Length: 236
Image (cartoon, rainbow, N blue to C red; front, side, top):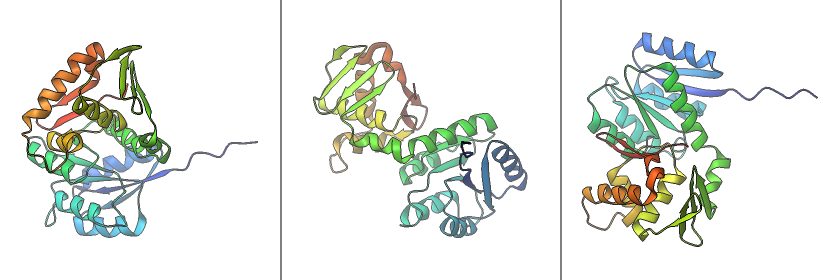
């Protein structure tokens, strides 16, 4: 019995530069994706709602309605809020990257980008948003490389050796492990660890991350700093 080929996923490219769109279409089609395109934010919103692509590549520097507003509207709509978004950003726009992630984008790739890196980041985002992967959020036990986290027992071990963490460090590690590969701003991590109604500074998250890395030893290298933005957990 022949196994049917895997279903091709659809990517919507919202980008106003024709040359970039053509390069993206060529590389995406060659790697098994179907592509849609829109040259403005308004058109992108219409296509996203009508076609419900598997992923959106969103340029931040769009005319009239910029990518941040497009991201805000996509996440504000019941119909499109679950579609993964990867932002395409120009260099030197760290503030926009942070805001885009805060608005709900899943990842970003700076321009000029390597098609190989972009495809790898897209596939990582699609893996994280796979329904089977999301079932992990209901699992008591998470594993990543040498790290094992048991939520029911509130225990963490590295290569079988138990590590003593504070409650905040434990919550931070679990949040990063559940969403490994995704970049989080310091503000997002603070909300995950202490909640949005507690007044603390972003510097606190750096302290928590530093302490967590030390306690995890060599495995602490799996927590990566994204300069000017925040942190992400490596997909070991």
